[in-house]
Image (cartoon, rainbow, N blue to C red):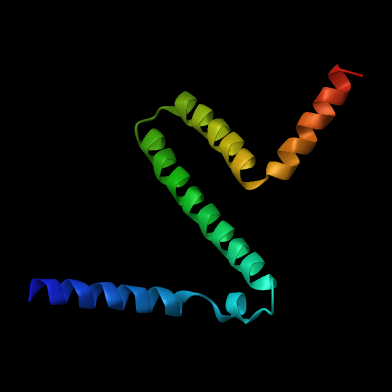
Length: 102
């Protein structure tokens, strides 16, 4: 009985996850489906990352660790820049290399 309940719960979760995928991401024709879905997942990852950063920031703020809070914000911005904008990071690295090594 317990196994049947687990299977039913798993099936319900899969159906719910399938229904949560926006129709716009799946309605695109041809090769655009993967592009739209990747953009959607990138957006969700950004929102999740922002939420996690906000929770940790509250921890530093409540404990009145303002110096560590600023260092955490700088680190979170740099990590977010590396992860969510790799093209801009590459362009910045090339610009710095062109300035240093003419």
